Length: 260
Image (cartoon, rainbow, N blue to C red; front, side, top):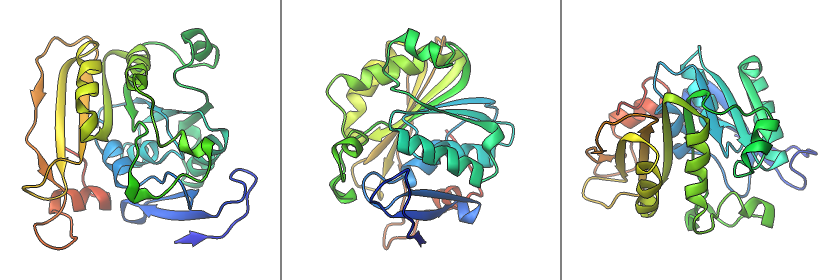
């Protein structure tokens, strides 16, 4: 669904209104540039059912957090997004979906100094779950429309470690940290996670059986001493056609959560 709507929040752009979770959640986002999609749903669906406080780093328009909150009514979320326009849209999306009272949005560079983050109200060792979908380049998503939007799609070498470091700072003891990223980033993610967390688990996601992994979900537990675990790879689609396999079809329709 599209909504042709001029807005001061996203100048010179058309917004679309996109339905997720079988229509239980509707998100407004820019028509061009980075757009939330299946990765955001998978990330939100990966949050443990017992989570009560969520921190979303680089939240964009808020899709992953809103997916998690739609499915977990006890969950409250803090969304951190450096782009003020995207942060404003995230706040609007929370309100439009009846979650404003459970959502706090901070327009803040997540890699800013700890004192800056603390001054903005981002508490250390506080959140039971921290999630992130860091920037990456995907040529199938088209070109970012501006240098500002391009920052949501590209990450300099070494910056991924800074994201994980920030996640570790704000996760509560025993809290989980979950990232979704392209499979090529797994070596960097593992290096960053294993330095800071225990019980690190990697879930490779394949387009279809027999194909290389395109995405990985990585989870670590702050303070855990449990060993590393490489989980069995899972295919998103059936062998032929574009249909999702039942496990993922249920997740995308909002009738099931991702089971680690």
